[in-house]
Image (cartoon, rainbow, N blue to C red):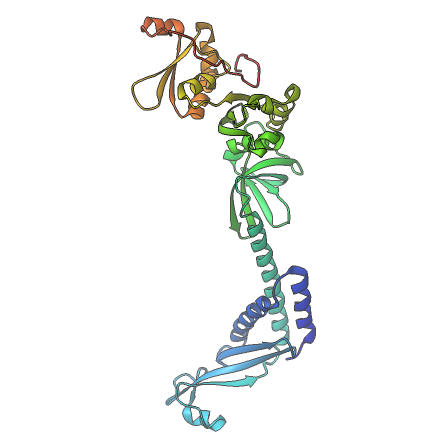
Length: 372
């Protein structure tokens, strides 16, 4: 069978798609062997196919093993019959004979088409996977493609990249409409049947990190460092930062001129409140700052590993704890310490009144207010 146009088409595919012609040829050989076995089952036995791109030919061969006594005529040939073809054949040798399959052109063409399309799809998927393999932990912009009862599916580009927002990664109250552009944090990249699938999130603390990195050059440059982030998506975030250069005000850098930088992040998060906390090597001082926006009078380490009591003015107790305990809960996550918040009067009754106020009053990004 001769078809030079077919092999020329493979050359074009190699140039356009960057897929080596040999990849197609190997897959095509295997597929044609399988198709030939189905088409001629019980008549020709084992089949080999040889493609010659230089000559533009496709040749079919039957393969039989030389034996003393034939038990399977499809796969075996007697020594006598083999030597009638070639006198040097010995038992155990393989005898190959060329044959021309009848009415196989249509099946061959259909098989070639399926193999080529599959290989193009697989190669583009693998290329997409390779491109996105190092995107974990990054910020991407996706376009909402479709929704179902639970998940949101985003187009992240290239046509082969699908981002999936699972229910746990969707912010309560946020709406995701088809064709909306959404910034997302990449949690995991994996290979799916229809291409690379990227698990993305709108609730991850990593999203806050990346948004600030995008807005604050000092963070991207490494001058200002985000130490920790604790977040209850859609409601409030606490972020601890540190300046590696004493000349640079970390909080000022994150807030920006007239609050421009932090407001840009807040807008992207749909109005989520953000407390920017100066990080401290001293864990007790860090705890005092983490309970922002409440003023903390003192922090004392209690018996047990990473357990502390924070004392606040009586009128700031509800602010320190927060609605449904949110402020204290976020402070616990931020510091990694278990924190028992007490009012001054309660501490005095316990004989634990603060000797002095905790140093370093916190500077939240937002003004002190009731946490509603």
